[in-house]
Length: 471
Image (tube, rainbow, N blue to C red; front, side, top):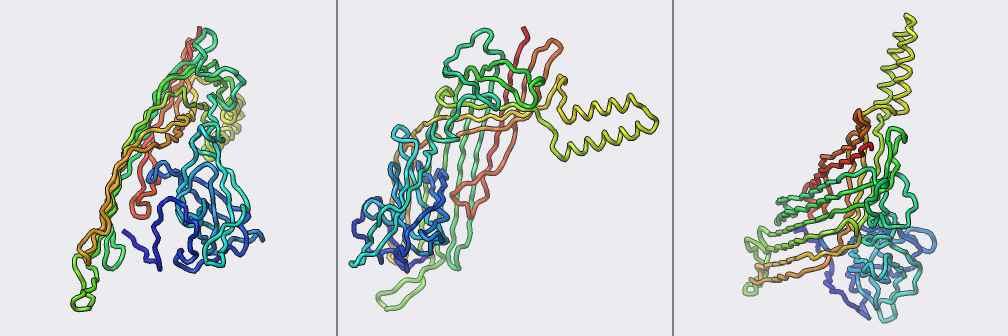
């Protein structure tokens, strides 16, 4: 466990301190010599502190349009959500700045979606009173932030059921449209599985006399099994994009998660004061501490309560591959031109035209299918445990010895998706079929142990199958 020794360390619970001393910050800080004017804001969900998001506040400018100075206090307040961190002063949270940013990890929980799909953050200057306490000035500016867990809150949260680049107007809910003759031409299934694993067991020396061990064992599995129907389209005749309308969907998304995080810190030896001799003496082994946290939970979502978008496009050659194929055809044309083989030249010209436009008459067309599934605003129960122990060899007793367990509510704010590759085929009877799949692995970032452990692994597998039978 890495320890940073500061002139003073304060552990504050959530609450209000009406007369917080300016000196309580424990280092040289300045009151706001100028008022804040603007800043940049971003959010990142952190599973370590459910259901909190991490709030990043950067590029803070003062009223004179200069970057906010270092070690200067700034006050922030959420209108409907909750902030955690900093010093709590009369309903405001006070933070210090570095490089025109707040470097402290600010945790934020948005309001319930039934209350609001957005929130307002207010910013104000901080002043020191004659009595040496902190005072908050009037609001200098506000920032609106979109609630990231609510459907309808913003671009990510407005998942109209679409198929293709446009969504024709339709007053009815696609999930309520029955399978009527002449409406649904394509039917099929979507199967998607996303597995995230994060394993770590690293022991590192963090100082001359101390070691820290970081242990993690996380496993998260998301499975989607969906049946869909949609209006007619003919990809070979429609250019690069399929144009159709999703008519119905059924199925569910299931999510199972388990996190197990442990940090262990120990000193090879600790210097203790011997009251009998009045001297400092080394005691070996030294003091130690350990923290163990677990989380387990599962969630279910009916796809009718969420949303689904699908985009099917012809897979064209990339720029490099296109140039290579064009060069080959040009070389063949030059060879055919020498003996004046006009028939061969016309054939190669036709091939070049197909290469540029895409083969409109082929019975087998390479395609890409982009699928995005939105689970909607769902909270699910998560069982958590926490255990913390810290033993001081000098006193021979535990400085900390705490354990607890509870069930909390977490937002199922996925969304999930994949880009699959496959073929659009047409048989000799005119029946069409779409088959595409994915089997891919990629790293994914986890905050716990991120400065020590290797990245996690996310594996995505799945397929989509659609059929249209000619009457």
